Length: 219
Ligand code: DC
Image (cartoon, rainbow, N blue to C red; front, side, top):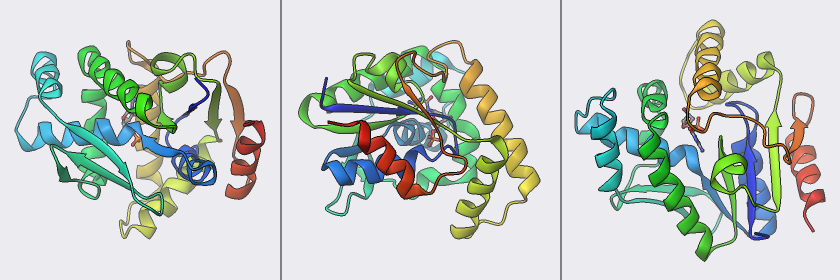
């Protein structure tokens, strides 16, 4: 599996930024698996599906077409049943609801299938929570990115401010704590470091430093 690079880690660890830059440097495709869960959540909300109804979510996943497309600059386009939903999947409402969808076993199975299909056709950097542990346990390169909690809150704050969303530091902190808990404590495919993943603490590292470090492992 030398065509797959797995990057996992909590929200705010820098994994999206690093995965994207690393993919660009290596001419790999960048696959943000969180975006796939977000897109399915968007469809569930639009169709009024009860997010506590696992069977309904599972059948929704069965009949949903999800695509992650990289443009020439390496920017991501997320397509839901053929329509571009890239900007619609980053709203606070989506972020608050996606964990309901991501905890459903049948949904995760479907996503895993789809992600493995993508990997058959392309060399990819996959980024998510369960990539090195569940989706591609045989990936040749596995990284687990992490950062101190306060640093992750600060990064999220900056990111939201740059996107024009004014949210207090305190609210972000609360929200991140809840997300960490949900990601790490769910029954199926919780976020955890694969035993053979390289652990990188990005707290005091510049973006370029992290990318160089990751690239340094890749032969
Ligand atoms: O990385 P993100 O914040 O965009 O992810 C959105 C949600 O999807 C988050 O609740 C974690 C979940 N997720 C997951 O369960 N498994 C993945 N491989 C990627 C994301």
